[in-house]
Image (cartoon, rainbow, N blue to C red):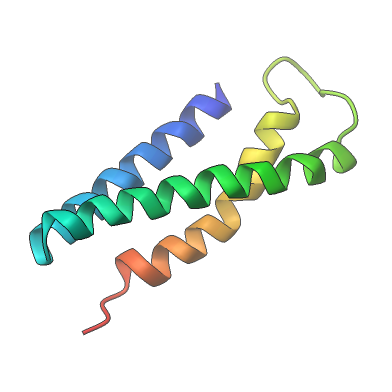
Length: 91
């Protein structure tokens, strides 16, 4: 259930970045922002999975597993990245 919430946050963030870049710049920039978010998500999740395995060798419950922990660890650097490149005005 927590994983689903994190995935939905990523979808909302990707839609926000796409829409903002599409309206302010062009469709190409909107698609590039989607690609960047997708790359950051997949690479970040791959890097946080071993860290989560070291922190939590076995799942605590059916609702909080190693994948949940790795996604929560991924939210921290992603939120900083998302704020710096998509929310803050760079005008």
